[in-house]
Length: 267
Length: 360
Image (cartoon, rainbow over all chains, first blue to last red; front, side):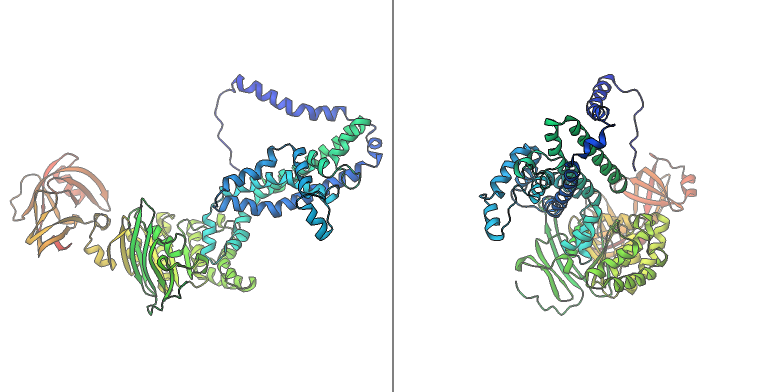
């Protein structure tokens, strides 16, 4: 790994103070969560019967949403990075829109499209008998909607940074554009894809607004961990804290595991 | 789309036109199977653009490209065979070996895309690695290879799918001087064994002279000279080549043995008789220097000022300013005897017998 040469000399106070404040601001809530966690009664708090189904559902839907994002998002990123078509800038803006849009608005929009009477939902229902809202696949749809832009942006950045001449070299060796993508480009941008997948997975795991709007809050089928935390907070704050701690540790575990093995400091 | 015209000629017949607004490439090339053609020219002359056009990586805006009688590209008829469907192999300047594949899989890549199964492709690739002397490095990643080894893997990768046109872009440029000597002779051997057309792009005259059967000198997007290496070395038609082969070259108008030099108020007596526009050239070793005006029969005699000196092999190369800009080679002993330094004013003489003129 490269190491940047550091300039000698002290750190200016004007930079140091806000930097330390920023660090404290980011870390303190986590410390608070750990300090306040009911460690002694942890097992009984988590025994309510909602935790493990919710955790399992969260992990399953977040992983499914990440897979959906990979399958659709990587080709989309390729299209944005490697082709030139009119309105490409506009399409790029559209792709990033879910990043800045309030997730609840996303959930409402999903309902309007995939709801029983929605643009696509009505056809899905009549043609295949598929309904998405308030089902587990609906959770995946909601999570993928908010998570995919992270993956697309990450992969597009990696593609733009990679040397297109490798693709030219592949073409001179008889590789079609798809073969070149599959056998040369994709392996070269794998770290960027992995980073994007981790970001998307983390975003999907924490998804709340779009999920509760589009998929509702049914224990066992659509109640993910963030939803369970929020609901527990109203009648059992201790359980909410315990759930939060579990969610936090799951995130840390997965990030740490992936970072070491896959990303080599890419994020 | 029109069917490809049935050219009987094997090899390449190309009229490459690439108009990029600020730069226009317009050159004609022909080469027969078994022939190595070098495109020689300074940086920015359009050599690499020509090579990319041959490979189909840069589209032609005009002209026509045919290989072994098949038209690969002709903008006027809209015909264009995509790069991946052309029977070409390219050795890129920095090789562009796929960093995530072993040397063996790099060489097998072009065989796999052309339909060979993995095991067959690998066996064939292993054979090619052996031919370039890298059987021991089959499992190595490109990062672990030296420059010379990477160049040989790149050559094996380009040759393995048996292209009808091999393109080499400055194949020696990334190598250090010592490796270059080695690789040049190996490359010469592989090119001699190659039975289709090879086109080599280089700015190094030595590479061009050693490796190529025929040279095309390109400057500013145009062909300024074509011929065998020895023809071009003896009778350069541009300053670029003259400098490369170490000749003093002037353009002028001949009247018998005398050539009136363009842009200079002097004439040059030459060994050849011509009339009209000519090039006149003499080697730096034909120049003799004298402290005072020599008592000589030489008619090519001018007062000059030493502008620069540098070691050139076992000689000292002098840059002389006067009625004509002259490059002269002297032994270190002669330089010491004359007490020359930058700014010295001396007389330069050139024997007419060593000065040649040829039609421009």
